[in-house]
Length: 163
Image (tube, rainbow, N blue to C red; front, top):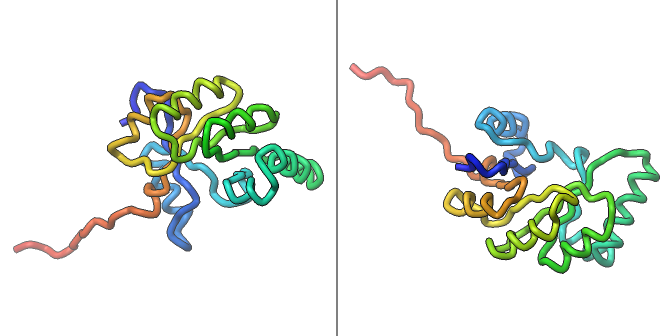
């Protein structure tokens, strides 16, 4: 599905309570990559964090200060809602990956071009098996999908012998 694009598929933390490890293992076995296992793996600044901190720059700076004060070495991922936010994120050092959230194909291509090699890129939001290739062809490094773990259908498997 993503062959030839260089894009990797990521799961999310949206898993069934109590069996996260198994679901993430299944993603890995199936060729995907694990995003974060829990909140302690990386710091992800989402829209609410950014809004409550008073903006992107303040959120990133407060996060970097927290990491320094607590002597932690965690990667920072920042969610962007539009191209203007991406431009602001790029003005601050220390961001590992930009989450290009709910962008259309055209804006995703623009975002990837704007970001260049300054940090990694990840698309998310409403991407499914019909649209994933198109997003990968925009040049993102990763595409994340909670559906890999939270929308799995069970296979009806019977162990009854047939006579």
